[in-house]
Amino acid sequence: MLELDELMRYDITDLKVFLAVVEAGNLSRGAEHCHLSPSSVSLRIKGLEDALGAVLLIRRPHGVEPTPAGSLVVEHAYRCLAELEQMHASLLPHSQGVKNHIKLFANSLSINSYIPKDLVHFFKQYPSVRVSLTEHTSQEIVAAVNAGQADVGIVAPGVTHPNLIFLPYHKDRLVLLAPLDNKLAKQGTVRFIECVREPFLSLPQGASLHTFLMNHAAALGSTLDIRVQVAGYHAITLLVSSGAGVAIVPHSALRRESHNDFAVVALSDPWACRNLRICIANRPDEPHYFRDQLVTTLRSALVTKGEGTQPDDGYSAPEMPDG
Image (tube, rainbow, N blue to C red; front, side, top):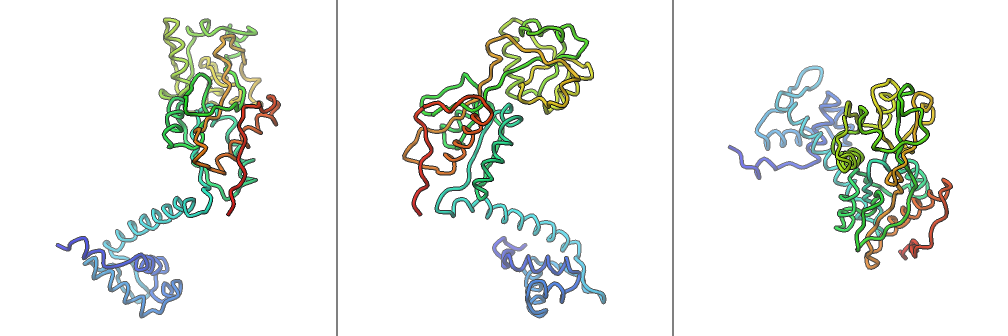
């Protein structure tokens, strides 16, 4: 049995040459694609076959085709090369003089409403920056930003941490969606306690809004009757329109063109106000220029949407570092 170090007597170029020949179905055309002579390509494939201990290509009058072992190598070679490309892409930000990769953690409300458009504005200014956007609960986001696992967080009100800076982002509110023939649809405002006996449409278990509403129902000594759980707000609006039940969603998540299909009723509970906040680590000795520019862009969006002016909270993005 061949040892691993014996099997590894080939390199990435050998795999690329082999794939080029398989794709071309012809040794000469594969060699031309690799800018090598046919004899060099033959030697490389022979060396790959010797290293792996298997015949990889069948030579036929009209060209070549992979053997069963060769097809297995093709499958794994494509996967390996794709992983290498991803590794290089992931490492690219670390090779720059200024870090240009941002890890942005956000709750479901902000991802389904404000962040996509705000990121478009940011990328217009900084097209070379890469952002990893992932969804988490507000508590998870705060912990991740504090631990350095995230550069920027978007969280709901109520969470806090002594080591983090919290800045206003967008104002939003939770509203009740009800079928047009539901008794609650006729009310101008409604309290949550008036809704809990209705069949509910909800995001999946584990989503931050689902957990939030279930906890408030429990505080009232009740349990929500979850009739259907779906992955997105648009699906919820379609179900409400069909009369399947009621739902509580962020007002920002509603599509304007569908508002005539159901009633949107204001919730009078104080917690229905969901003013989102940006959080970043309070570590002035660890500058991150593009993170700070992203924060500035997000805060500018607050003003352009007419939600007020940026508060004088002492935060300002630093200047671009020299070099």
